[in-house]
Amino acid sequence: MYTQQLVFVAAALSTPLLSSANCMYGTSLFPRSEGAATVEVSKFGYTGLQGPLNWAALAAENSACATSKVQSPINIDSTVQLAAEVPKVVIADVEAAEFENLGTTVEVIVNGTTTFGGTEFSLKQFHFHTPSEHRVAEEYFPLEVHMVHEAADGSGAIAVIALTFQLSDDGTTTTELLTAVTENLAKIATPGTVTETGPLKFAEVINHVQTTPLFQYAGSLTTPPCAEGLTFLVTQKPLPLSVKTFNEIKSVVKFNSRYTQNSLNQNNLLAVGAAALAGAVAGEAAGNGTAAGNATEVAKPKPSGGAAVATSVKASATSKTAAGTYIPPHNHNLSLGTPN
Image 1: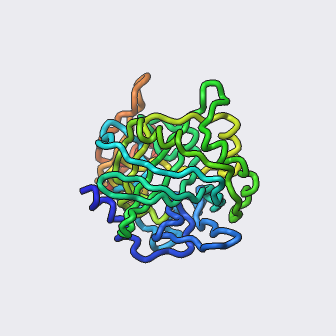
Image 2 (image 1 turned 120 degrees about the vertical axis):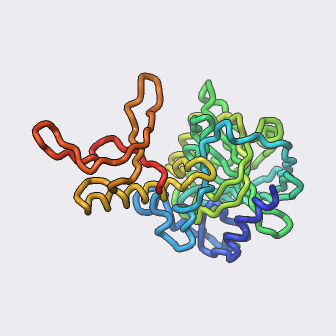
Image 3 (image 1 turned 30 degrees about the vertical axis):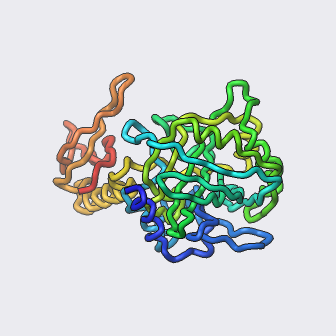
């Protein structure tokens, strides 16, 4: 089962996309141009029509962003299990590594291996998301680092170790790797630019990955084309992050976190919204404000300290006051239910 999950992304992306600077950049699925003085800048973003709500419209291969029922990132709750084994991670320290600004993230090119689930994966790069993409029990973190791996057997299978970071209590303690990475961050403030990091030491990060519990689930790319199939290993406990380092990263990366997706195997939130909107538009055209006869989720006002309670009701055709004034039903507080 584990191997089957991993090969889905390879099958979905069997043709490499040569100019797609995304979170899988540098793998065989999204190869980078070698020896270039600049790097390809992403053709998507996180704001307006370039943002996640419209990713599916930016390119035909992005359709999964709006239709797939297995999308990342997610809120990690009690339904997501911990990994049953500890990955074996080997990353050699380096004096410097290539450091790139893709426009939607900054990325460090390093080599290493992670053995997990009977498969050996080659580390291709790690990149940054601020704020975190995953949430744990609804809590978000100021920073998340994705260490992107590809199966060494050439199958194209992808695994991502997601490191979460929390601001340290004293505001100054930080993970040593981040200090070295951000040493030359100002040199790549402009998208498309390239520089080198300072000396990188990985012992602290490796020890953390191999000693803290890891949540494991099969999800998707968190950037276009949103293909399903990669395995995420998300750290349960965060690494420390200083306020200074966080602000330095945030000043260059800006905001690059995809919104939390629906629970795994549930309808894509964009599909849910599109169905609800289509029903509302059809109802308007019929002159009654809603799709007549369709079941609509009505969110009742939440009690003090409690969550809103959704009740399925039949949408009424019209609503009138005692004086006979028409009140469109869509003025009520309607939440998006599951499409019919």
